Amino acid sequence: MTIDAETSRRGAHRTPPISFGLGKAHVITIGIRPYPSSRTAVAVDAAGRQLAQRRFVVNAGTVRQLMRWCER
Image 1 (cartoon, rainbow, N blue to C red):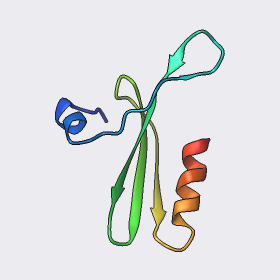
Image 2: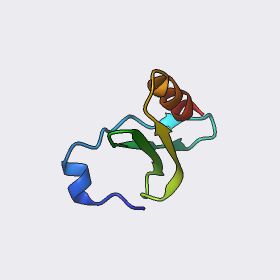
Image 3: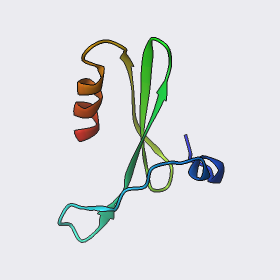
Image 4: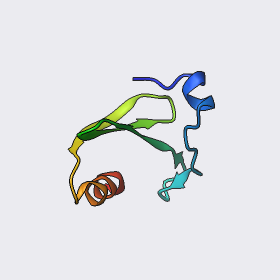
């Protein structure tokens, strides 16, 4: 999966690079696609390469599960 210029113009949220003390900055972008009964989250690197993907069933704990997944 890659992120094209159109996706970027439509409002992809940009965050500052995160430094891990290794002398390099790493940018990971999380995209979330909402569906009526689930949410699909995808993590991509600065080059647009997919790093991880996960589907979450919508329930009372969905936001907490999504946040925990994003933090790992």
